Length: 511
Image (cartoon, rainbow, N blue to C red; front, side):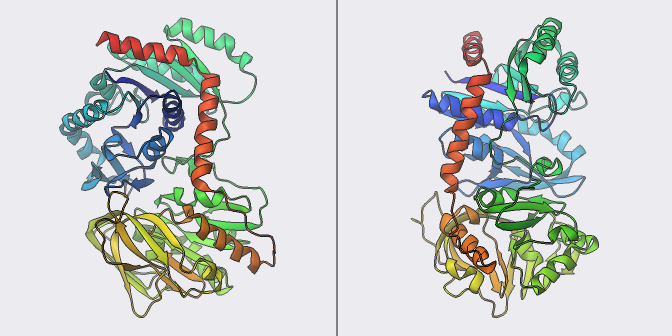
């Protein structure tokens, strides 16, 4: 029978996703067929499965850590905020509807049976499932219809480990308070606590650990140090907290415009992993200074973010850099913003707005959402800064609700859909994106994970600055594997894995 364990947090952004990835890697290393599971995820960083289904990036990198192909069943409900009050609801990888928070709370009981069915189907195929909660189980106003924290743990009948972030302060109060707000039967399910993100000498915590164990009756399974591992982030909280504030000097400086509804900024992790590249996320026009390349990323509210670009002065700043011959790249929503016009009666309700006018394109939003893996080939005729990428093979994925056309534009690439990771069901090649001088746009996410493209782009940026050094390329897939192994080693060192195995075995025996 499948064993399971669930990590819940005392708050959001306490490090649950990373620790789940670490446990997935450990179980995989120990020879167990393992999968992650998060019943409900709220995030703007998403990816596409081989079947063309959309799911959270966190569960994708957790699946990679477990050595398996991502499956939409690992994240059956994905909420993608479109504003402060509404979110797009993605069920089993496809858009279902848009809802406000109150409507969704009322809707959740209808999801319970579907989530349980999906969970049970995974349980039939894997030795171990590592579940992740969302936010905190102590949100007592949401307890009655919970499907992601204790409600999910009860459906799965699995032990819970509580993760607490010491870096934000008040760690013992957060542990005690969370446990105090749980019902007795919920608290009985919590079999351990992990103190996460500790900096310093762990002996300083010993007395506090002894006291919190005595007060709660719940053992502390270990203290995880602050880790210098490079993994993808679940959502934009990492940006808000300044995780990507880069101060180190690199030969290539890339500025990514941090629009309010930025999505899939994990696109640029592969660039940031390169030894000669600094990637910065910027929100003020003056922060664009010194950039060798400017990127407009994807957005979950393209027109709303376009308005912000103008009001903040960032639009003017980007256009000025373009006039100064600094290359500008737009990905997905960023590509749409670079065009002449965007017509949106679907996502934002703002109607028709002019874009930045750097590409001769028009984008029409539609109800249908494109979600697919793609392979392609870069165009054979590209400007100097992209010339080294001409004709290169690329792979990535598309997630968008717009269709972009242009008159006489030069395409960025030609692409075709991948079905289940192959082109057995071959479709006609289609033009993707547009290029005009030092401006380029594309719908393809994951573009920079193509090593040859990244190497040639970086080489061109170095040459433009008169730097003759050959651009070094970090194999991003190999880099991620090394990070998963590093994470697993640190988790093994810090946590009582024997106790974790015992609680999983005991829970199985209690069923």
